[in-house]
Image 1 (cartoon, rainbow, N blue to C red):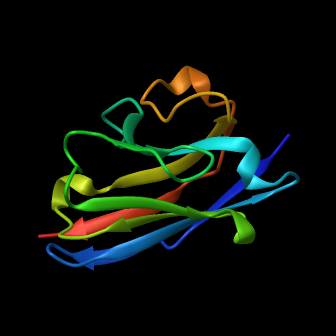
Image 2 (cartoon, rainbow, N blue to C red):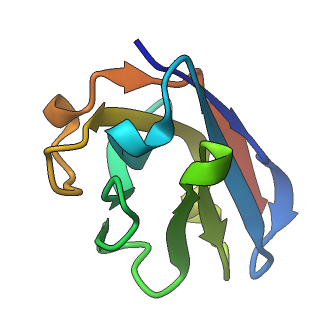
Length: 125
């Protein structure tokens, strides 16, 4: 089973940017569709973005479309989330997830069977 590790979280002010990374180990990332989810103490885990195993297809949650960009570099076994124009409501723990490559990138949590431990993103107003 693949292991996932997120990095790049931190504290920023509204309007600033952050780039999250998710590195896979155990198996090549090219075997997986991958995604980002986020969670606050008050809410269930929400979908952020997903990317196909090849990187050719992406899918975004409504609240981040146009501000966030998901990408991947399979040669480095790493997926990224570039987050621009951050807002206080983006504050959450961000998780990366991986599922079988046969699935298209989608918001359905059930297609992802491996999850990272999460990285905190805090956006101050």
